[in-house]
Length: 492
Ligand code: AMP
Picture 1 (cartoon, rainbow, N blue to C red):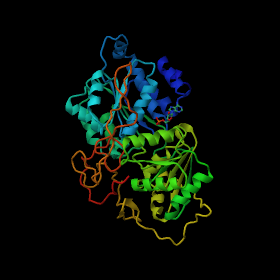
Picture 2: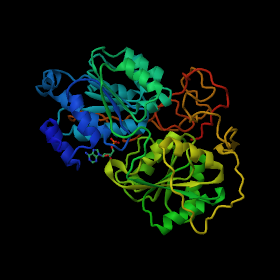
Picture 3: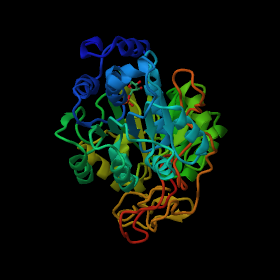
Picture 4: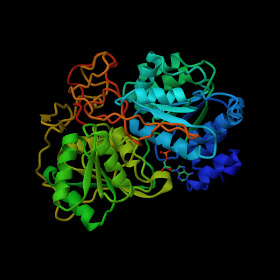
């Protein structure tokens, strides 16, 4: 099948072909006709499936060919935001907008991205210049709504991207507030990797007789990814990783650690081994994150060490290796992590270094993905059979207080800036450990037809993203009381 046969305009087919794609992925083949038809859509698709183009292309088609789009062509009307994409993190928001820009190249539509943590004034100016498609994290969008610096009365299409993550990050109240200010008659598209009861409730409220598409089994891991567990003693993880990188001659490896401190330490250790590594997490300045990501993408940096939330939205074509240096506290994060490789049909390898403390986590992961992962002991790194499990270090300097082999009590970790963290109140920046991001200012936006406006790539961030969340997470508005200490600390 080709993009031509899906009914997209020549301008879009040309742009997508130039981007190097000749045939649609399964989600695109299903979502594009559904969205072109004008109805609502509920799509179960993980990152890596090509979902972004799956909604971007038909949205661009509709906006460029409807009455308002034609009026734009004839220059007989001003730009107004007609499509709004909500995304959980600044990285994802920037990435989605970059995709829109790529595919809109031969249309007369423009786009912009806004998120918190950066100056609002450049965004105000940009919005005043006129934008057709806006990508936003919910918190900053509401700031603009509150200040009256944005008009949303012409919205024709709303997209919720990675809706499950938005709910995980506590954005439900913000999403509801946004919905309340949108025109009631519109097309709604909801993309989610998983379908919790909360997502179902949101979908019920939001969507009107939606088309249903699901391209990967729920919580399934992508089949083209080869997965392997390497049992290892906890203090041998670093030499094992260096060994794997060197002996296999890995050139580009994304490594996940549980904590920001762990990420920094590993960068230092790998540096001593002569392996180029940089960390990406919520305590890093935005310029450091952008630099690390750029060097990693262009192949000049061997290892990118990331915490879970910082890694959301990182999109690297053909990333060959993902390493779980630490297993994630939340089993679903395993699926998200390894989904960074094996994207869009490419093959990938995901290895996990698992010590005795993490056996319960591994069991939980295997239960979720409904498979037993193969184990391989690496000669020279045989784990001590008598080693005793210790509580997992959940945040720098503070041992865990878990109930399951050191795991935090029964819940998702409250990553910094994640409003669900214990103690997060109704305020805006309730980062549980009191940290705030050091992300510098700088609006990220793009204007089409030669209008002023600067786009600074993946800069900017959410408000209240202290403590490690890379995204547009604003603190506060927790989901009701939770016993303090029921969640892990905000050191991701
Ligand atoms: P996404 O799931 O939107 O994050 O996309 C995953 C990756 O697939 C991105 O690197 C895209 O550039 C790539 N991609 C998107 N559409 C296609 C296509 N039709 N064929 C191959 N790769 C694609």
